[in-house]
Image 1 (tube, helix red, strand yellow):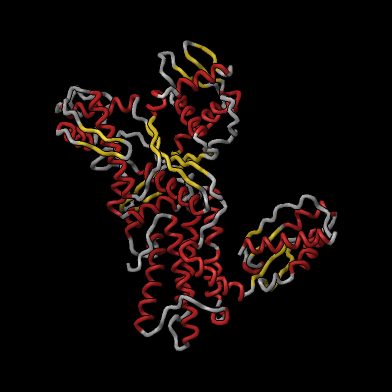
Image 2: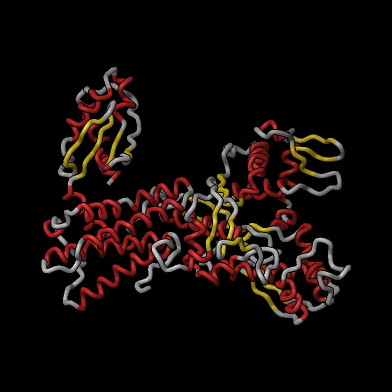
Length: 562
């Protein structure tokens, strides 16, 4: 509906220009918003104020001129007003709202989807957890946000590639191998021989037991059979990484998250990409030697200080392979890349972008794009939960899924803006009450399904088709408000995708569920008036479809019974 209003304004602008009533060139883009108060209409536009100076007219004069050309919008509008200094307020006719239900019915499962992405390629990297232990709740929030961003981009017509990047080498992996080896040799964490920075969770015991039993592990990106020799540290390392990648795969599949590509940090060294990047930066004159280290002049590209690339001991700092990795993304043809990461990665953004600029490869300054999420605090009984029996030092994603279910875990992780800290209340997530947001939304869908069952038992037929004449009976404030909210789904999906803010869709669902419950509490669906009952059943059929479509985009089910 918002796009229809925008089209009316654009047509009016063209008509006014053709009649030489407007002189502005170029004409500004038309932006249609929703007024804060329903008294000011269903939609509002400030185009008259934008054009007033160029037209040398008062904003209200420009608005009056446009309104003459808009008229009633071929029956779409019941009224068009001018408010304040020149806002144009649009009141959509009840008939237009009612008949849009037929369009929603025709679109069915694809209602809410758009084509703004036009099939363009976008790569989204998320989770990217090192294989040193089970996924923790921070990874879980990243998985939920990243996966939902992918779903939103797909829903708006983008060709999405999902990528997982992880470190399969370095000191953390060495500590992992030493920890598993110690367990293989019967060494406990309280033993003086235990590795100084070893991992102490129970999962290390599981990996050691499987290694000694010479088991085979299949992960999404590797297949490894254990050698069984407790003194072969390289074999232990390879098996431990595969084992924990397998565990992560299971966690992600339980969370309904999948990936198209897995990239290993070690591959950037073995295929020479890190070496090549360093050579390019040297050749471009953006590096210098100081104190036995190689530095990159990141200050030339907006950083607050230059950064060490190669330490005095010969090892590269972590952002050097990051530059090589992102150059690889660019060379694979991804002119749009989105990285979803924890807020602790904030400091890497400037230096990675600076390194990419220093390569002189025509890579845009703001590339790649970043979405950073804040920490998660888990509460049970009002007290913070800090440890997991299996992981030892933190709460795992599997812990939450096992306790509250996949749907509640996904919904809770995305129901706040990514850069806001999140409190995950386990008790609330398990509660079957209107206070639990995911239960409230899912119950709305289940309640509608229950109404349909009751209608069939009473001899009603839930209609799949309707006419404008029959839908004209839907005229109560609650009915019209419910219809208005249904039509807002495509815009909500667009905005959520554009701003990388899945929480907008959870807010929409909560508002839609609340609107349905309010409608149902005030309007009898199955009445002695068959025509009105059928119209209301048709409205609820569209409401159920919209709830289901929106939940599907979030990767959450729409149960028919609860």
